[in-house]
Length: 156
Image (cartoon, rainbow, N blue to C red; front, side):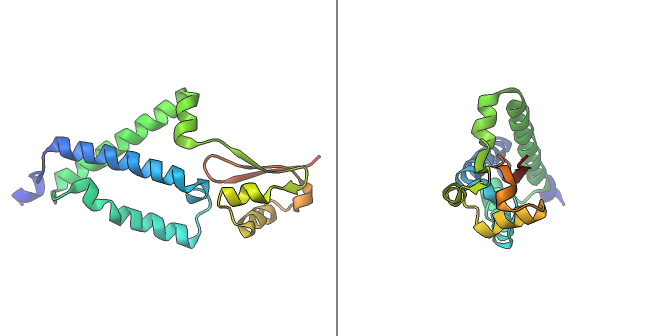
């Protein structure tokens, strides 16, 4: 029972590990494209689940204590809060951490090269059109938002 509350590594190391892993995952997910955090396919869901398992050792090292796990969770939540706080107040930080929206269709013309560059399969885009009950020709604007969702504005 004593081991449950005794850190296996120094607290500062757990804090550093949590901050580094958060920053590294954020950077890797941003580089992997918007689709990763937007509409999750089964493949994307598998990646998210495996990511959690893969970073466990990176976060905790040899620490197996309850206290160590709770400390890492607190640090991750604090770093996430700080990131949200900064993105809400500074446009440059928002663009750096969240990205920018991308126009993927306008006036009935779908920009297939842009969809491909953003790793959005044509079938996914077609599904969004069906969801909004519009055809490609009826689209005024379609925007791939920074969070990975696609917003459709109908033509007037």
